[in-house]
Length: 255
Image 1 (tube, rainbow, N blue to C red):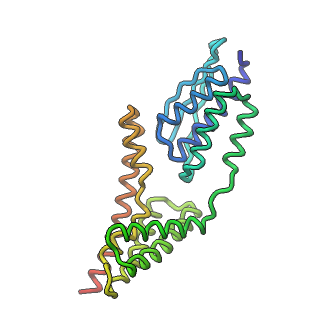
Image 2: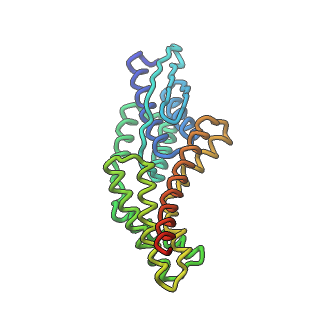
Image 3: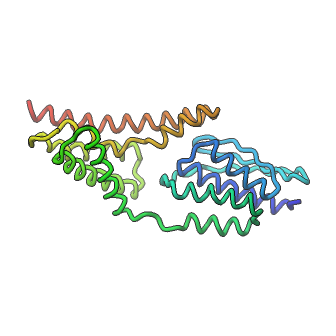
């Protein structure tokens, strides 16, 4: 049987754990499964209410039936599939080996303290990925090089603006505008300019929120799913605004 203080500490850990998963781009059902799995290993029953910005965790001791509730604000973290995988593995390790709360905290802190990928490495990988999209849609080598350069500039601007905590909708508009403007230089060359301009902004497409929104709706978390889809569609609209500004500038310069 867990004492009231132990129940409070368990709730605090589960809220922190679930917040990290939810904020890192994990769909709602997986967050609930992983959190409840850890709760079972600690002999508590976990009930959760998840929204886009807040989360309520209710922990009930199986023996004493004492209940403790806590509400937390879900922060926004960078999407990391490696982190999400390690945190999911931690839930299974806790379930299989019945880890103590202190051990869980130690392992959790080591996972989140793991060094992230270098931003410069991420920058070049995104550039190569977007150039590959250009090739996939039929762009020639000149267009691929232009898209690669445009992505480097656009994504670097995105990194700098995010570091300064500028509104992410504005970040998407400016990044799309910068990348498409650089890609519009393809119009002065004998290359597949239309493909270069169109694919220069694909690195901004919010694929994970769109996918998670659909998964949440299919699995019954309609409110969270719709919220994620709306936010993702707003980001797509921001990309369209940035690209439209470039096309307007090109049109005016040709007149």
